[in-house]
Image (cartoon, rainbow, N blue to C red; front, side, top):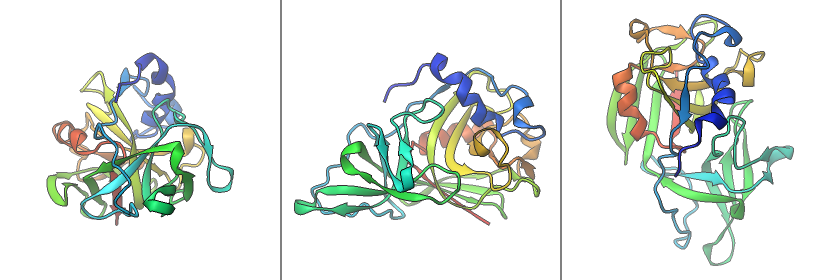
Length: 256
């Protein structure tokens, strides 16, 4: 998948990064407009065929991601387009499928971008391309630890910083839907940020309703603490290891 041009995405994408800060409102977050660009989706080059009568339900070893190909209306008038509000390709987590004759998928049951968190809907099969994903992330807020799995086996364990008590990290099942690289590895968001489909449960007046991300940091002393506005921070070295383990469509389970 090709990388998006930085010129097209940097302004709107700054709102995602702004919402990940630690100490100030998003409109004044320092370096929220730091140079950054969209990373490739990281998905397999070929989509999975649908001839085996699979119902596309997630397992601990394999899930499916849907990349939106054309504008389509889903759940209660929600319209999805090939590009999201930040100019990134629209990526959805797949929860199942409605199959027709000869096991051909007619509809896919997908996770919808929030807010509110937890919305799902059905989308026409012809409006998306399906990819298999073998990665999975689990974030334990109480332990302040992230585990990245590939093919059901842990590949990375990392301590993280989580949301402060007044701005907690939301719990639930989400999906990686944006991947951003930062030009300055010493900036407030470290080397990269993974946008996920979660939004803050309390920051409703923030830009884009407080989107949540996993990202690096230039404040490694906050790792292991409840210190953010809801985003999940990793040390830069571990964020560098996480990026190839979290292609677009990777499920993210956040538990307390």
